[in-house]
Length: 174
Image 1 (tube, rainbow, N blue to C red):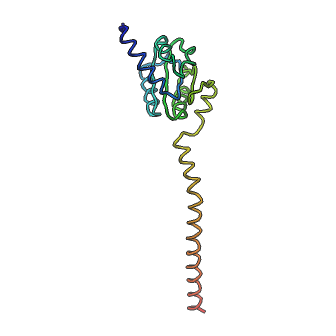
Image 2: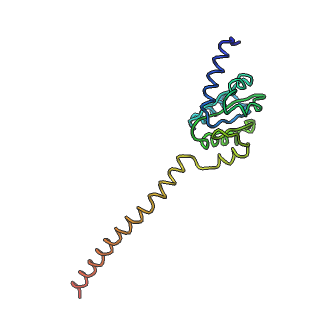
């Protein structure tokens, strides 16, 4: 059993992390074995996020005074939290993908960019392109006109060379 001092340190550490978290998803994780849990933790880590199984009482105490306080009603039963202060899409995607193959893994509540959202909204967010995908799409759109200009300029020179080549050939054989 943990000492009172150790529990207080845990609460303060989690409170600090929850205060910094912009995105938080509360999940029910019962029925997962160690291998499945490790797989989930790796997927969440790849999304630059954190995942913790929490004691409900300590989680409620930690959430006091943070934006996560609005989610404390969902801290019932076997509970875990996944959170980050970056891209909400990558976190929602990682958890949604995992939930598709593990029906025992259920979303209980969510907070995106500091605002509480409905569970259905989390699924919509997971369907969005990630931050990196959006940047790639934007860069393509910015680069496309420049590419077309370069192709057009090169085409003028190429067409001139072809016309001159045909004119020279016409004089030789004409």
